[in-house]
Length: 215
Ligand code: B1M
Image (cartoon, rainbow, N blue to C red; front, top):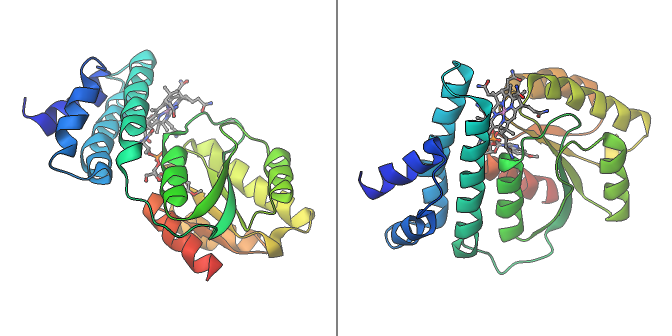
């Protein structure tokens, strides 16, 4: 297979052997982010479709996710970074009950490379932990990721809890993840939250929204 098709195939097949060599070759002709966005994420999309239609079993999805993570780790040092620093602090987490973290970690990389301090709490984080971290780090915003449909409900509960604790006005919230829709966030959740809540389709929209929030 040609290089970029082979790389995409590696994600789908969960094939790690020779991954780094292929990535290094790819870096000779394309920027790291483009390799992630156009090639690797396209492979993950196929994995999602195969899993969703019952053609792929969970252990294989996990293997694909591992290759994806290894690829991102290998590409990360090659990504563009801005010189600007100290643009603001965001606490980032995958919500309670949800283990998906590839998208969240991409958001971390993009924000960090663009001058933000990201406190990445990891997966399955209850709102109490997120809010403690926000207080401790004097965060300017909270970012929550979740890919399961039930995570959209958890996010709503989290926003209600933030209202109840009186932190909504000072903590804008950024939400992302495959199960969310723009209209659910901008219509339903905006009604619920007493502060500002926005939806990011991808990591770049997350960056734009953070820039707008901090402006
Ligand atoms: Co899971 N899984 N999974 N899974 N998995 C989905 C989400 C699913 C849609 C697959 C499917 O059925 N087609 C489905 C959810 C269905 C639903 O809820 N309706 C599903 C399921 C069912 C499950 C389990 C329940 C399976 C089981 O156990 N029977 C289980 C859940 C366990 C749990 O969470 N409690 C499970 C487990 C797993 C693995 C562990 C095997 C693995 C995750 C490994 C890991 O993350 N470390 C996995 C994977 C890999 C997927 C799919 C195939 C791919 C997800 C992914 O990494 N995509 C996924 C299919 C899909 O999403 N359609 C699926 C690439 C990633 C870059 O995209 O995270 O969407 P994404 O991030 C994007 C944007 O959404 C956005 O930016 C990123 C791109 O720039 N974004 C943000 C994300 N977060 C953001 C936050 C922001 C801003 C933007 O600001 C804060």
